Each structure stands twice: as structure tokens, then as C-alpha cells.
Image (cartoon, rainbow, N blue to C red; front, side, top):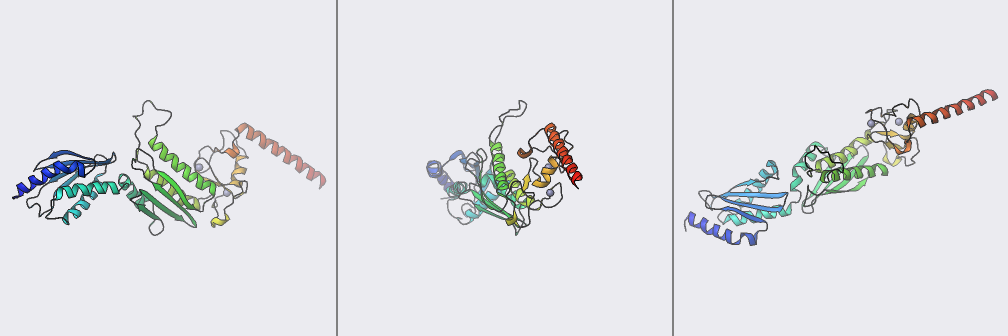
Length: 331
Ligand SMILES: [Zn+2]
Ligand SMILES: [Zn+2]
């Protein structure tokens, strides 16, 4: 049979059996000069495969071009290379069905595809080579990250659902030696970022465009990694000394201890003793502000109005004067 006859025969087979042999296929075109098939695994793992037959087919590999509205050009390019390599092993065979099955399997086996570009960026921009570790389990759709700074470490796992980014990622803290309250804050805040990416805000802004779930792997990982990197070396904005001890086993757990680490709303980390003194010393007008970023300090432990703080301070001062007088009188 000549080339044209062979191709015709192959295309007839494809039309007859494709839908039963490869899940999620839609035949857009199937002619000698162009075969075009759309393959869908999930709304975020969709590829259109455009195939042309080279002059020397089947002794040369198919000319394949991929199109996708949901995957980045870099990713589509990457898939193209993998497919070319696969086809090179199958020169001489009927390649169309082989290719389509291979693409489908690739979409099945790689749940991390929709966040591949984000993960590349995390590795390139956020992790320190030879210090931090990123492990991907493609089949399970999970990524584990371990970051270190000084003697502190933080290890977490992110799992990416099939429906990402329509559905949010989930994360668990595996291991860390930060104060428990801080670790709890890291993970809760990370979950909050993930939730906000997929759920419309309760208070709708009428001028805002309709809500769309957005990719959030990078944002969440950036937050967790930066917590692990910043807090071990962050200085107390009031005394200028490092807030956490160099040795994590010396972390103060007494919430009223002078060196207990207090994280406030703006994210800055204070010694409890320094902050307590600052919050109880005038001026109180306009509320107390973080010396580093000038944001108003909100904290449950010092949740009182400027007027009350003023009154308490005045009372304490008066009491001290009384005591001083007593001492004077007695000495
Ligand atoms: Zn301090
Ligand atoms: Zn601040």
C-alpha cells in the first residue's frame, strides 16, 4: 500500500476505535492533511493535539503541535518534547493511536501539571540550593518542602486536588521547631490564603469583576517559606535584639515571660516584656503603632482603648509615687 493508502487506513481505525480506547477524546478533524483531537482529563488538564503526516511517514515521526487554553506555553512545549521522544521509539508503526494514548496517560499521571509553572518559580525564587528541599510525588499530587534557617526548620506538605485551581490545595505541617503558637499561625494563615483564592468574598464589591478562582500554590508556599526564613533572625522592633533564641530548645513557652515571642497583626515579632512595657507607656493617643511598619497594634493581650490605657498608666504612676514617698519617709 502507498503512503496515502496507509494513512487512510490508519485514520479509519482511529475514527472507529478512538472514543472507546482513549477516554475524554473529541475528534475535531480527521483528514490526511490534518488530524485534530481534543483530550480532556479535567477542566485544567486539557490539550488539543494537531497532527500532520510527514513525507516519509511512518519512517519519520508525526509532526505534532499542541494547543491549550489552560496550560502555559512553557508547559505545552515541555509536553511536545516528551511526545517527540516517545514517538522516536515507535518509528515504522502506526503512530496516531500511540500518541493519543500516550498523551492521555501523561495527563492522567501528572496531577501537578496545572501548577507546574508555579512550582518551577518556587524552586527558582524561594528555595536555597543545598539547604532547602522540595520533593514532588506526581502520582499522589503532593509536594513536600523543608526549609531551614539557622537552627530552625519547617517542613510541610501541600496536596493539589484534580480540580485545582477551582478547588483549593490542602496543606499539613509535618515537622518544625518553632514555638507551637507560631507554627499554628503559619498553617492557619496559609489555609486562609488558599480559601480566599477559591471562595468569593462575603462582602462583594459591586464594581469588581465576577469572582474567578485563582492559582494559589505559589502564594501559599511563598508565605510558609518566608515565615520559616524570616522569623529565626527577626529582631524585636523595640530592643533591637533577636526575638527568638538561637537555640530552639530555649524557646520561652510562658506567655507572660519577658522573652516570650509575641507576633502581632502586622507580622512583626516582639519580646513579650518589651511589648508589654511599650503598650502600657504613653503616649496613647491614636493607639499604639508598630515601630517598624507604623501599623496600628491589635492584640488580644492589650485590647484596651487609649483612654483606659491612659487611666491605668496614671493609676500605676500615682501608686508608684505613693510607694516612693513611703520609702523616702522611712529612709
Ligand atoms: Zn525586645
Ligand atoms: Zn509591624
